[in-house]
Length: 66
Image 1 (cartoon, helix red, strand yellow):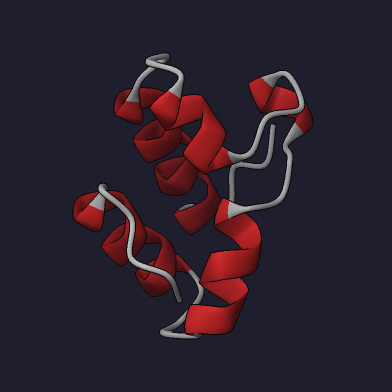
Image 2 (cartoon, rainbow, N blue to C red; image 1 turned 30 degrees about the horizontal axis):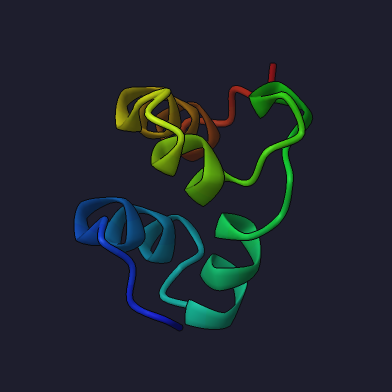
């Protein structure tokens, strides 16, 4: 996986994907409707905030998909 300027975010996504770095890379680079069809990395880079992505990851970890 390419290194990002967001190591905490990357680490959280790799953990979410059960240490599957390829799946984590795909998730980070796939547009999400919840993020106005931006990728999680684009969202963070746009200045909209790491916290939104951290919250999304937390919800996914706990099985909250809405």
